[in-house]
Amino acid sequence: MQQSGFTHTIDGRGESSDASFDVINPGTGAPFAVCPDASQDQLDRAVAAARRAFAVWRETTPAHRRERLRSFAEALKARSKEIATLLTREQGKPFARAQDELNRAFANLEGLLAIELKPELLRDNERGYVELQYHPLGVVGAITPWNVPVLLALPKITQSLYTGNTIVLKPSPYTPLTTLLIGEIAREHFPPGVVNVVAGGNDLGAWMTNHPGIDKISFTGSVATGKRVMASAASTLKRVTLELGGNDAAIVLDDIDVKALAPRLFWACFGNSGQICMAIKRLYVHEKVYDALCDALVEIANKVKVGEGFEEGVLMGPVQNRMQYERVLELIEDTRGQNARILCGGEALPRPGYFIAPTIVADIAEGTRLVDEEPFGPVLPVIRFSDVDDAVRRANDSRFGLSGSVWSADPVRAREIAQRLEVGTAWINHHVGVEYDVPFGGTKESGIGREYGAQGLKHYTEIRAVSVPVLPPMAPPTGAAKR
Image (tube, rainbow, N blue to C red; front, top):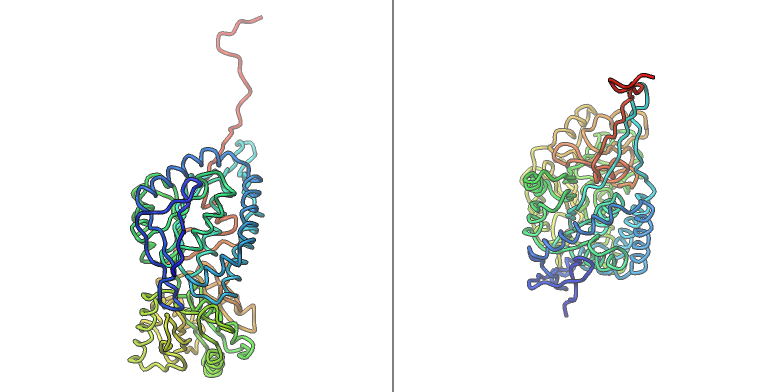
């Protein structure tokens, strides 16, 4: 029997819809729940509720907002097993990894609340006094993807509300249920209209980005969709933060300890079945350690248990949806005509669901789809290089620029190389990891704006300069009576 009873959160109340759609468990490939499909009228009412609530919420103090958000977080923690179970069913990741996702989301929420946005003094001298103030924008429209739905929804809620905004949140139609449950829990902790959650497909997202009652869009997803979001938001000059795809490169130098670093490199690619925007998607390895590292990665891949999220000992789940599953298999198949070597995996597993064996491809280079496009799945191209300058040039020769990393026993050398990467985040000897106090976002087509840190919070505000001139001494009015 399919789960049902999920509702949108609009103006502090639960609402169903006339229309609905099935939610697929990627571990079985079969529907397991029914989700309400929001109408345009329901979106309009959610936005109207958010606008009404904004008039009051914007006047609350940061201390009050922190208290409400912390109370909300405690309520989520009390139901974390229920949320993690639902997350595993709709997203596919192993249950332990679903619990990890929630814990990271809670840590990010608490960390963001430790950041204070105070007025900044620009000038206080003979020219006068000027300070910058950060004021809430209004209604934030947030759109989240299917790979880490809780980890991305909670920070958008936190950053929006903490800065004095209200929110209308739309999860991916592939993974809507955990976010709807989060919205249900939020009803008990915020005034009506402060947090609204509506589920639906592409039409709902387009209605949001074009809606005149929404002041900012915070979108995480693909480059192609991000471009459509930006074009639509331009009609009302909405503020936008776009955290888009990445085809992240890692450069491995010739002095590494292969045995020590291979597991970290492997999971920086294959964590969440490769479905992380900042995962390693291109691995550039110096020729001196190329064969040894390939062998070490294959050894790890062959030991990883791939399976449904509740199976004992499973470390890697399925690709989340059929469309992405077919795309990853298509990219793998394309390498067979490129004189590349598939060292392990390379095929779907013979079982229900969207399972692909972890796949490592050697002797491959730019000009192939697997290297040039973002696969977003459990497949890694390993690219040989002999000259570091050439590796940097090749890593940068991409329309993507989300993040990248350099791996070396010499941190000074690694830092010099990392500073040359054209990315929003450059890591040294690690890869993947958003921190609440560090701004995250991309260059090039990987995005606009930043999330997290003080800089990220500022993207949820309007900057106001308050200027007080130095006035000359008051002169008596012309024609004043003399004594």
